[in-house]
Length: 201
Image 1 (tube, rainbow, N blue to C red):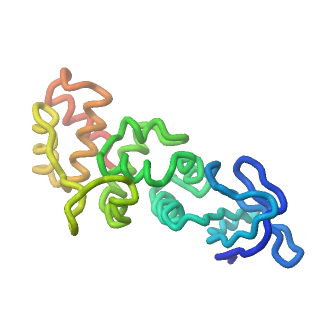
Image 2 (cartoon, rainbow, N blue to C red):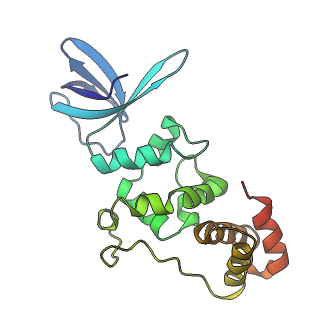
């Protein structure tokens, strides 16, 4: 498995590099905002994906970008290619969307959609908080994670109902947000609760 590459960029496209390492050219997928130029010496942390028909390399010079990539591919149904699509948005912006629990914005990321956005919140809100809120421009007191504040009104009642049914607080917040986004608060607590429970798991 290839974990790191050091060499010269000899070709550059929007989302790929060819890196010459001792005469061997490695094709590496990178994010569009990666600042690599032809002729530049690079030192890349690499994720290697091995399949029956291909070996794919995904490269990162930005440690935060690599950490977010690793978290994304740990979410069910998000593979390396989809994670790189999501990382067309800067890593710090993704952390901020998760920390501020914005499923609507997450759903607009490439390849995400509403259901995956909810799953990202459930799986990653605590993990991304540990990356350091300063990197995403989220100002928090030292030593704390983003506050789990319950919304008011019907959505807040829905969160309480889900917690009473055994949901963790962060999972209840994400499920309630998704249900309200799909149906609106006008649907009423009972309908929203059924909707949230129908998407569990």
